[in-house]
Image 1 (cartoon, helix red, strand yellow):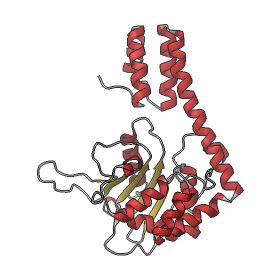
Image 2 (cartoon, rainbow, N blue to C red):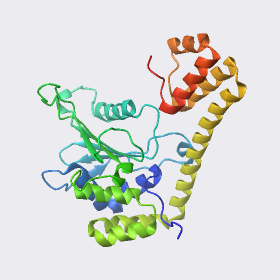
Image 3 (cartoon, rainbow, N blue to C red):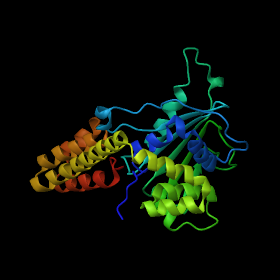
Length: 294
């Protein structure tokens, strides 16, 4: 049977589901599964509950859910269905934005609270086998923690296919299967076997019957298709031209679409490269979504 429910891997659906006031218990359950706090999460506030309008949805805006807990910690949750250029620097940039936004005009650094980023991704990024990875800054010899203010959790959904029973906590694995489910039947089975996930499947079903939510999801999906189509066109243009100048134009368009900065050195590199070198450069930029290191 065709799927009726909206896909929570689409970032606008994820935000509609987890940023809604009526779904606070669902968000609390998810955060508890990922963070495993020593005491229950009793109070949480969403700093960015608003849903962007149609014009913003057509752009590559980040639709995260920014949560503040009772102890002041900031939790920023993002669903990323596909790889953007240079994902790790972008994640650090997002962490830094949330961290520095806490500062007021007094610059009272001791009052800064920890920021925890949770990234759910539908692609593979790290070499290890773990579905749920936790990153902090540690001294390379003694493993002393530099600061508790930076913590990044990643959930790589493709790894659910090969995860071993002891690799991750069962609670976060169940949430991963909720996001990765391919059919309504799979969601129903999850809800039957795991009562804690049933409220999330019910909330997703309710959201999926909302015409406004379905229209927002449609607009966001069309924006993604337009973006990917633009990448393909930029890549094809250079190959079709077969000439150096055509390749330079295509690479500039590709960098623009991927938000890769073309500084003076890169512009000079483009200007002096041969057709064959430009073809290799175009392939590398398209594959890695970033400017290749020399």
